[in-house]
Amino acid sequence: MTTVQPSKTELRTSIRTARAAIPEPVRREAAISDAAGALGLTGVVGARGVLAYGAMPEELDASPLVRRLSQSGARIAYPRVCGPGELTLHWGDTCELEPGYCGLLEPPAGSDEASLDEIGLVLVPGVAFDAECHRLGMGGGFYDRLLAALPATTLKVALAFDEQIVDAVPVEEHDAVLDAVVTPSRIFRRGKPVTDRP
Image 1: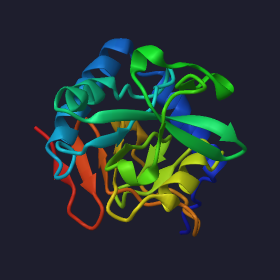
Image 2 (image 1 turned 180 degrees about the vertical axis):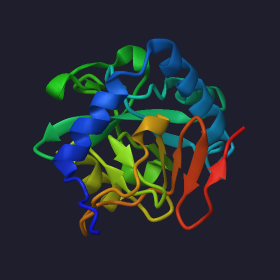
Image 3 (image 1 turned 45 degrees about the horizontal axis):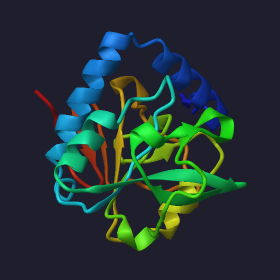
């Protein structure tokens, strides 16, 4: 019997619905747990330039990890939409972020720009992920273009709820593969066995 894989649109809808239903206390715990898991990954602590993101209400909040990295000396940058499918990177702080394109939290216009080669770690948002570290985004292609342009040595990590992990993300040739995906119960690393977390 053939199993029909959901389309990207169907998967986005179902995972976003599941993600939005997660209670706030569980969200806070997941953010703290994911931060602890990510800090154990090789290359995360010590990254001098970190590209973070301002989480939308349904997304996992990366700020607990961002605070820890900032305290350890990392410089934090955030993306800003500058055109269709295009991002610029700017140094900033979460208190400086303001609503921009489609309500996304962005650095203010005129913030100091960061170059791709100054970024050693990217915290990558996404809707769904699989055990091979494939990512399904919102569909705008912003991060696919950004990730393709990064130096090969840049570490790409996603923080996610367990509800965002699926059997297989539908992938196309241009879709980027991440180095790791961290959830409260597991850590997925490209090309390595899945690690269950205590």
